Image 1 (tube, rainbow, N blue to C red):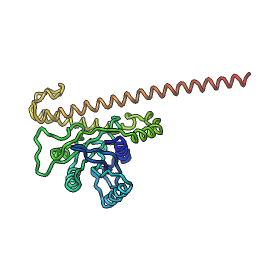
Image 2: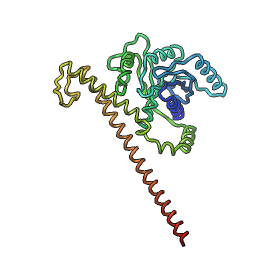
Image 3: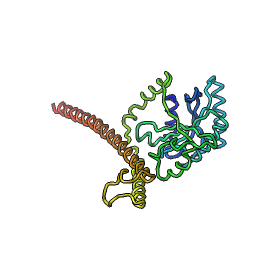
Image 4: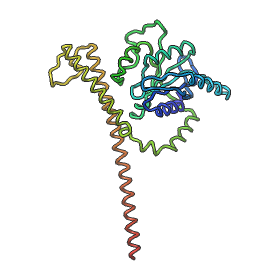
Length: 304
């Protein structure tokens, strides 16, 4: 995937905030890989739980691709993308149905999912690429799709109901000379904003929701283990090793991984916030001292 296409998709998803947005990706298929070179937005109506392309979006897509081809560009539409703000990169039931339809009529076709809120919080792009299995195909148990790690409790049912209907693809990035110039121009224009931004302050509510979700998962896993007769004394530490190797222990292990991941991201965000605050506070202190010295010098000259 080109850096330019990634930047355009991430910017679009970030503007959507907590509302899901959608767009298309262009490029070509090379062997068993998709090469994504560009992306464009679709004017769709989204909600906080689903996004569907309407007639207006379909008309826009047709007009855009025709204008694109008329300009001499040879890349074709090879997939679609949409956002999952705050709840990770995986495929819901609606996403699976949409991708199955696309693969049936527009093959080759790939589905991309971006989480703009987690991208902003962690400082790295949270993106997943997916394809659906052929109808009637049952994947082996070990071919589980995405990990449950990071999936919120209120989305777990939808995640589990369709997790065996699709598989994930590895995502890598490249940067052309045009991408490099574009990114340099963006950095030159917005470097102050990027330096001044803080994952800790701008994503405080997201971290709070993660913490609440992890707490709920741990409490639910503990209750399940206790009901199942797992050896756990009240007040003792609850760890995956206190239960047998079963679904209950798996739920506890998943919740534990979520808690560890959250702690790591919070530590990174707080460290970044502390370093930037110390840096800028030091700069403001120096500026204030220089201003005081200048005022004092002006008063001295006036008395003289």
